[in-house]
Length: 628
Image (cartoon, rainbow, N blue to C red; front, side, top):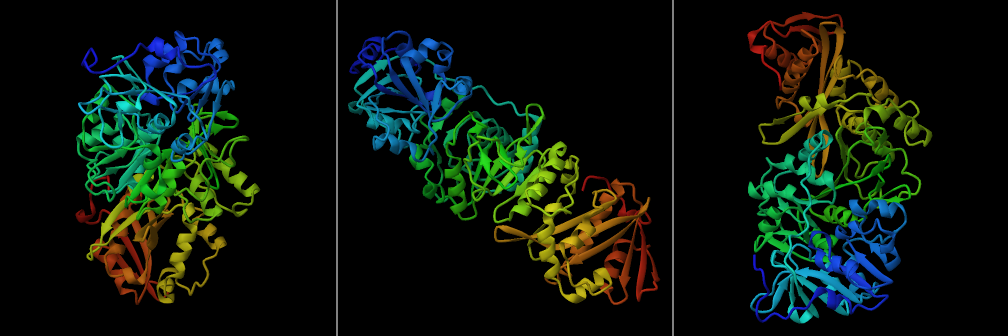
């Protein structure tokens, strides 16, 4: 590290230059880990500046002063984001929070809607051409620097030089203070069990070649370790943290499939460790831009397969999201969530994920709520949300009605709160009065029942257990079938599949004695049911099995695959055999059973068909070890 300024660089003493700031000045402070800590300390401790107004986005250094009331007698503090160290003062009303989208914040400075007299920033030493770098804090800092009447820069040789729209010529800086010091450090995030499970579900939604945005907060960053097996991911995001380093080092994030600025990670700031700062230093694979560019939805949408991953404080049963407040207490800021949700929605193949733990306060409070807390702000509307993920699963909301949203969100709420959420939804007339609620237990074990089957055509079908929220999809599946297919399954010309029928069909599904697997085919961004396989307990050791496969997917081995998967689940739950009734002319189904169970007992039944009894272990061919 260089200990002294270059010979041709004119520097001033921080105390002297900051003492020239007039009373009542509007002062911008650099952001987050790029804030000029020496200048901030000197401003507070060693000057007589009074009645100043301080503007900052992420605040760290000020946290050591705000516990002293004398600070607030000298300064008014206005923040665009309430960081964790500042929350207590915000709760007490000592800090004014300015809610604004990050994409719009730089323009507030540039068009002087927020006038600035002084900007205190931190830069790297100038190069031979007189250009300094804003390094790890471009974000809103560049706009503040360009619009302030006076710019005072702390020149720190430990500030990385980064590529992109990061450079500031010394001619743009009125006063330069040479002061080497370590940059602010953000401790590494330690994942909790809820985060691990959420990461597992998020990884199911993120495909190879996607471009990601990772929102502010502990949870979005902590799920990144569960993307380590993905390939060719891209990154277009506001914030780079240490959680991303393993994905860079393993080349999981290589930006080769990005359709906007291919080969480069786009960001506006870094917050993390010295290792992270060294990694981005002089690294041309990073392209730092201002927040009005990085968070512009029209820019974001230029990335195909753009996936936004962000967090929330609570989500109501209709899909409204609160991110910056709980009740009347401000916890953070609206930031760029809406910008990225809308940008990813406009992206070809893109979507957004809201990830949050199902509870707060050690499990005492549900984050999935019947209605947002009184006073809570709606940062993200119900129309902007695609997926919500908790440690209990994935809720798909986009394009779905309130009834379906309630069922999707209730089944990913903590089991202890599902009953009251369903009852509240009934009182609000969101769902039917006779609606069967999701099971009030942790259904994580159902993850082991998910699988994928590749058809001879190369098309992939995904299989998973049927959920209460699948009612409308199951209904659409039923009405897509031909009458003959329905008759062979139900043994009578069933014509209607009403809500009441669904409730009767599903009232006994417990995923042990009664199990139903559905096969899903991708159609655009949507998955439709094309096959269903079920078993239901007949005796303590046997279960009745039946299948439905849409005509255009028949004779592709799907029923045989479903039979094998159901058998594995049945054995786990203590069953030793399947039984089935098959119409006499349904030779295809008879062949499925007898091929799987060569020793099956086949006999004529009294209903113009056959009765087939199949012992799982009659043939050694059918013995295997779990898991699937």
